[in-house]
Image 1 (tube, helix red, strand yellow):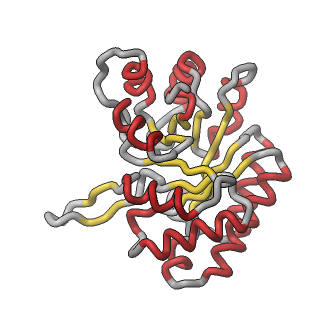
Image 2: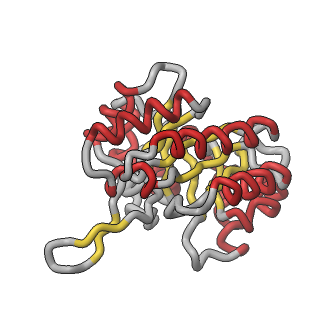
Length: 238
């Protein structure tokens, strides 16, 4: 199976324009990714650019911090699926999860899952593992996501930041530990997506070997080159 076919190619940087999106969609159709994952304002154009291909439009909900209201997430999802999104990646309400307000967290996920499903889309739930304090929280989020009907659980937004020892901010991303934990905490009915810091074919291979069935990355060109046996510079910031 092609690893490139598991990629959700990310076009999520605040500075990316429609010109960047057109270039990304052209690449993804050529190499055969699973989807192009875009900012909500880009969904309609993405659907237009990918029409007739096997690559599907996907987008993000409550991104990147997860703190918008459930109602806002629902409306965002309704608009996205109406404009052609076939997959939505929603961020959990991280603060509510850290407070142990599990009913709120589950209801928040379920509301998005249900409106996405009504529009013919699947939901991936982003935990932002790098900001979570322990494995128990991650396991509970896996359980709630499955109970709410999510198709995937996902490690990171690619935009989660923690302060390093020197005071600078460091982006968090997928880790082998978190992938093993998430895969073990979900039944086979729920798939696992790794995102954040996946920039080479070797990175992608490592996570797929651990049971990942979707990869969030902007390093698609480098990964595709690696899959072809070519040498390519690691690319992408996501």
